Length: 233
Image 1: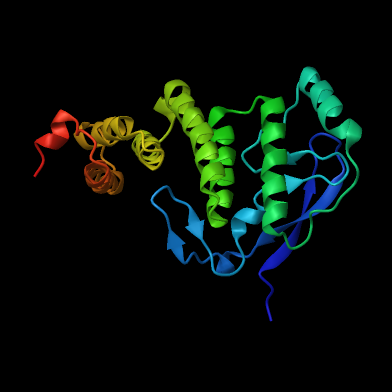
Image 2: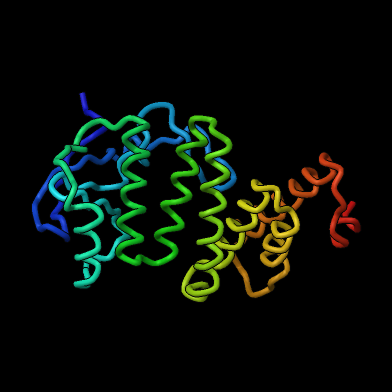
């Protein structure tokens, strides 16, 4: 019988030791549900638990999206903040929710020390929000959604031309909606809907749907609608 998890060998870019970490076989990556902010739910093994790779020797945690190059200053800071006090521990095993949470928090610390791009940090923060969603911890979920949204806005302002703007704007709109920042949500959804240069039909459709959902949310909460929503039937 094929197991869902398998080992791969990784070379740590900080201490240069080789170590093993686990991944989920593609055939087992079957989501049972997808949320409107792209959070995937799984009935069995969750591949997101194994995205972060953690060196057991020095504690450097990263994903495939991290850069491999270190500056001298980054090495010094990482050593002082993490490696110096790290006690060897092995994450090459089946991970619990708690293990996954710890791995993403370690990766976030590494990313901040490494001064990784905002899109990398935004992704880590968003995944942390999803982890709390799995546990129905709404307070912590919203806390990390707020952090993620701030980073996504930074991505849009600094890297927007290099990315799928429609998907990014949709995502910012959806996080705003989930955080009940409805006016901002409408702004992002409308930008995708009304920008004739955007040809991503899937994202345009998603923005239309969430624009309607936002309107319904506001009506349910008896909030005043923006002018463009008042005109909608």
